Each structure stands twice: as C-alpha cells, then as structure tokens.
Amino acid sequence: MKEKVQNKKAAVLQAALGLISEQGFQGSPMSQIAQRANIGVGTIYRYFSSKEDLINDLYIDVKTRLAQHTLRNYSVSRDVHASFLVLLRNIVDYFIENPAELLFMEQYANSPLITAATREEGLRMFAPVNHLFERAKDENLLKKLPMEMLSTLAYGSTISLVKLKLFGKVKLDGATIDAGVDAIWDAIKR
Image (cartoon, rainbow, N blue to C red; front, side, top):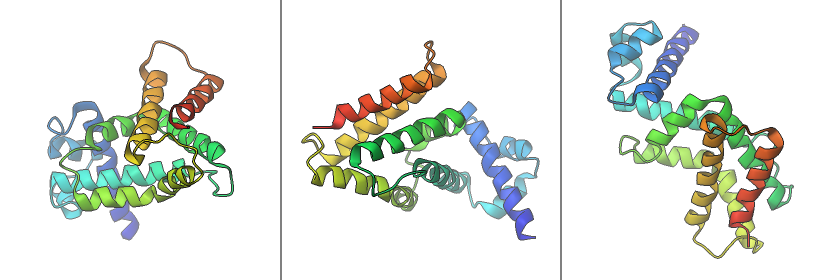
C-alpha cells in the first residue's frame, strides 16, 4: 500500500513539475496537475494541504535530486580546484539532463511561496558545497569578496552555461563545457 501512495505522490510531483515549468504557477491549476498525473483532484489533497504545500514539496524533491547528483564523485580529499570542477560540472550535467527542473528552480528559488523551513532544508542538502567554499577561503584561494557573492557568481555562471547549452544557438561539446566550468573557477579564484 505504501508503494502505491508513493507512486501517486510522485506522479503528482512530476505532473506539477512539468506543468509549472511550462506554464508557471498561476497557469497550472490543481485540476490540470491532477489530470496530467491521472488522478482525481481530491487525491492531491491527501498528500498536499495546498498548492503552496505541493510547491514546497516539489522544491525539496528537486533539490534532493540535484544535491545527490552534484555530490557524485565528490571527495573532500581532492584539492579545492578539482573539487569545484567536479561539483560545477555535475550541476551543468544535471540541468542539461533535466531542463524542466532548471526552469522550475529558476522560477521558485527566490519565490515567497518557498517557506523559510523549506529554504533551510535546501541549504542543508548543499552543506558539503558550502564547506568547500569555506575550505577555499581558509586556503586563501578565493577573491576577497563576501561568500554569498562568490557563491552567487559561481552558481549564476554555471546556470548561464547550462542555458547556453540548452537554449543557445552555439553547439557546446563536452570539452568546451569543461573549459567553461574552469573559467567559472577562474572568475572567483584569487
């Protein structure tokens, strides 16, 4: 029975992700989400108390998968530069493979619909990345800028690289993406 419940909840989250990335929050009524998930509208409310609750669950769902993918092949024993390259390339690869999740995250990462508790949970998942930034700072490898600015520069550039690959008119191969990721490191290093 639990598996059936999880499958329905996952179907709702997947349907919501698709619709919201295509049509936005306002353009994705619960009735359309239910229709795409192939369940009744009332069933959605067994799993989510409101549309905002669904959005927060979806945000955590996407952040969880992104964090797991981002931390693949990451090791604290690797030097800082190599670690940054692994993490940033993993983010690029993840969003290239999951463009709907990129579009969703772009819309909701700073949305007032995301609760403080949800935002905190999302940050907790990326604690190893924050520790890497701290390690780089401790090793005097980063520019003398606020940590929030450095992480924003790195993440924003990474997302721009993904968008260039997905939506740009230029074809980017793996070697060019790797060079772009290395250029992102160059932008924040001392």
